[in-house]
Image (cartoon, rainbow, N blue to C red):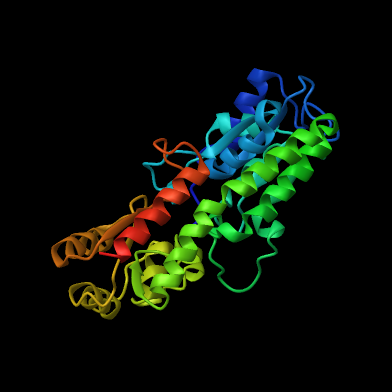
Length: 305
């Protein structure tokens, strides 16, 4: 899986920053009481998890998201000394897991601490098996499990504000209903419809909506792994587009190469609607929910064309 980014001068960079800020190899404050300032320092591996934590924690958290550039390939992430400093000061760290953000393990090991709480969405959702899809933030129906774990952790770190966290968690869960409603509409109208995607970023969405992948899964796996798809898989994908046997192309604009660019061009020429999906929360969307609702609504509209 092409999900292990390059770590550039991490150990030396971390040492420089920790020395400059006067940090030690342990966290600033006990995880049982949050930070000394009364605000919980949180680091999220990706900005969509950071956004959700920020919604639940409100003014009681200070969130740093490691991967946050919506225009960059997240698989090519390069850690910085500033990231290492944020990890060193964190009371709570949330990583995606499933091999998607293995760089977090390196960041954490560069600043070991027994008083820093680390959680992974993979463990929260108890995802196992061979080569599971790591893009779990597209599994909307299971996100309340993640929000509940965040509420529990923040309440542990800041017990006096636990009621606020619980209320914010309920608000977040309720805000997912419009997204789930759109997914339900897609399923009721278009279940069984074949679609294509360049890699399995929207895989959980596709499954929940009852859609089917109408192109070789080995093509999408090759793109995800950073390798070249086979000529046979490429020909099959091209044929699905030109014949319009697939009704929509879900295109990940953050991870592209010549093969995916060619498919996008072919879909445009063939009149197959293209719906953009991304791996990072764009700055143009207000929050995680707005991002997902927009993408799902665009998919619903495209299927009706």
